[in-house]
Length: 151
Image (cartoon, rainbow, N blue to C red):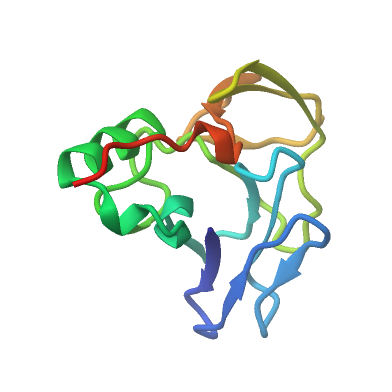
């Protein structure tokens, strides 16, 4: 799960896939892309706070710390169950300048059960992990890809 935080008005908005959401003052905005895992974020004052999707799964508390760590690493999550997005290697945030959106036009191709290939077809300038990339491999938001070892 991703939420946006506006550094100006300090409003927090949960991202959803059906509409572009902005903060109270309009300086920060975002929306999940159609793969339901990556998100387009707009505005220079937008920060993203991430919570690992499996955190809400009933099995997550039953996993060993080693199993959780391997899952986080394999899915390029930040450290722990919650983190600030935009860390080096974070390929789930597609950043545009305009806080009013809308999300980037993308194509999603399933590589396997756990991985999607995202191709950006939008003509607007954007960045992923601080640089321009037309294609990126990201974790799938497929519930069946959640595997782990119980304690």
